[in-house]
Amino acid sequence: MGTLWWNGTFFTMRKEGETTDAVYVEEGQIIDHGSAEDLSSAYSERITKKVDIEGAYVYPGLVDSHLHMVGHGERLIRLDLSETTQASEMVHQLIKKVKDTPPGEWVFAEGWNENNFIDRKIFHRMELDEITTSHPMYLTRICRHAALVNSKALELAGITKDTPDPEGGVIVRDADGMPTGYLLDAATELVKSVIPPVDKAYVKRALQTAVQDMLRLGLVGGHTEDLNYYGGFKQTFDAFNEVINGVDCKFRAHLLVHHEAIDEMKESGYSKGEVTPYIELGPMKIFADGALGGRTALLSAPYTDDPRTSGVAMHQQSELENLVKRARDEDMPVAIHTIGDEALRLAIDAIEKYPCTNGRDRLIHVQVINQDLIERLKNLRVVLDIQPRFVAADFPWVMERLGEERLPYSFAWKTLIEEGLHCAGGSDAPIEPVDPLLGIHAAVTRKKPGETHEGYLPDQKLSMFEAVKLFTTGSASAIEKESERGLIAPGYAADFTVLNHNVFEGDPDHLLHAEVLMTVVDDSIMYQKNK
Image 1 (cartoon, rainbow, N blue to C red):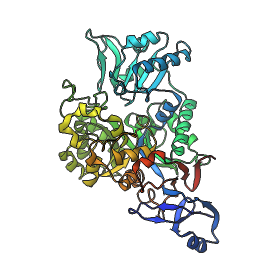
Image 2: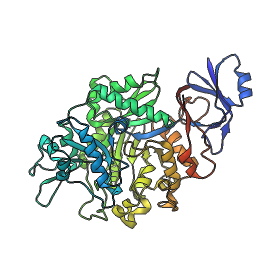
Image 3: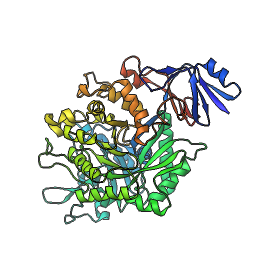
Image 4: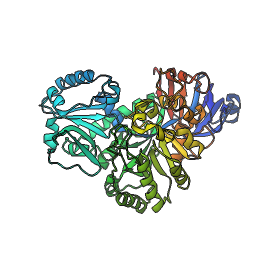
């Protein structure tokens, strides 16, 4: 009837330093905790299985509060350029990829980042044409708000000198007005629209790859946004149900629904809420702006390193308000991508006009803010989805974008928490590594692994307890599950992340060498090292 998990150190996360020795579970729910001896005595007639943790350290199951699971799987099965540090190396990898791709088929790659190159090089379409003219090429930037394409891809998309910039996007052009092959935000959709659609088998393969990798890294769940990009809502949603079937695969997937997928969701007979014990439909996802890397995050003042622009608004204010109103009409909260402070202001304006009455709204990223916006946020039913790894990835170049004056309120995780705002922790994978221990490390150290300085904006460092809370109680509160997930306590789900390391002791760099020994979802071992 029940399982006794024993011989470990279980961190309850109810308060700092609180631990227990063993946990008794029935039907996927924690019934009691205490010493193994006491629990064995109290539940002797009900214990049907005992799991020896063998002295390891057990945490409430870690959950990524914002990522793109199918996209993460794609990164693992496609050409990954995220670790490429030289433009010449990127060329070499693309040449190899072209050789392995039949003529006429699309060449895809993920994750290039010019900030990793000494010369900050962004390739021109003619340079990509030197690699191939017989394959259309689509190369996604690390932020997923920009892409490089060659002339063949531009031709298939019908993009010429006379093609106007779409609303919410930019076709970057040279001095003669010709497209360079660099597309920002909504402009990427012009090319995406002519890429052959993927089938469900592809989506399932990417999703299975992602889930297996996340379980291996100690994640018991993720809040993900995928439902509008892989053949529409139904195909992608069906793939989630078939992969995360609750039998051989248990994983807590909370699915954000892009505003363009709402109609298909309704036509398919679904609405916000739990679909299975492992899959639930969440808020309406809306993009308010782009990303700092491509200078499309919407700022209230121009970029310091390019005063010609303040970024890109994905929607006019009235359109954004109408989208929020549509969510309220569907009895849904919203999850709005806001990186720049001006995008955040627009989102707050819309939420204030149409307040949330069912659940909590989510503001995703919140990388640039100010005190006035903080005060307004305090009056709203919102959770802030933050990604600590962005500090390790974006500094120091982001300081060139924003300048000294804006830095005190940029990536200001400590300030947000001290101001009493609810924060949840994620990775935004595939933009950043999905490994939650890297996210916790970045929150605590504010630097890349291996760097020896005191951290970027060190006054914003979180304590280890605060950082772990982001991925446990924080992620639970983001979806109103704080009374049933995120703690090791009676009444909570038996979801555990088991490590060989006590993260609350020693140097934070020890996190970089910690090993996930076991990932448990619903009292079931979904990953076990070396088994």
